[in-house]
Length: 330
Image (tube, rainbow, N blue to C red; front, side):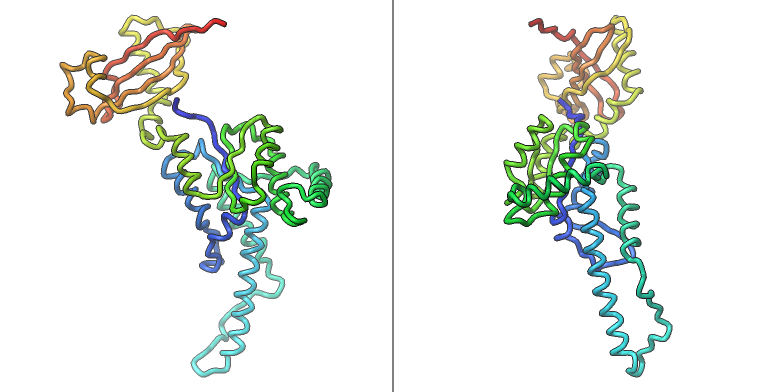
């Protein structure tokens, strides 16, 4: 079946920060490393409505704080350099304007980061509701004293807070597959997976390698990646109208018709030409220009499986075979 289920990938700070070149340009926010790799992969494969990246709010704060630390380090080095070089002939810093000491770079870079996230509708910020602040803090204190995962040797407050944000994300049921991408293999382990499954009745996938994560996504959304144009076309009202027209010519009375599910898309074979009585129209050399799609449609309160042959140049329906779906009785 062609998956239309949504996936959420939650990123830990270390998976982003360790790959960022913060010092390149302090005037804007540009993602780097694994964060950028995921963004580009999602956009390239046109999966922006299916695959989402979740950034816990504490991850946002850590990214901003790290950027600020590096900025002020560079800023202090710049001021020191001006003092050291200012009296040397040919060095003239008289027109150099530096911000005053109370310059709020934190607000500046956070605004840039939030603005960037807002341009990517598939990147979402996971926030902990204010009403949960106090009970969450009490829970974290208990976990810290008892050294429960993801606390380790009384450490790991940030990871523990990320975990509580995940557990309290109210839209978790919107996603079929949930991944956490982190470098902390020690604390993000099977104990947390069990806790997650107990609460949400679904699996949590822990991934520590971005390439392996992408391989998993390719397995889930393989048809979308291989046939993006045809998948998009099969979701249009135009295809629905063309399919209805074809079915009406086969004497099917149309009533309350809906395309329910794209089951599969595949390459054509010689056997398919024979099954669809197309051997007089197409040869094996034409197979490259044809695609076979299996869909499920509903008509007059009955469900039907349909195999459809398309010409890929114009997505025109060449032929189809359909049969009523067998109803299983207990």
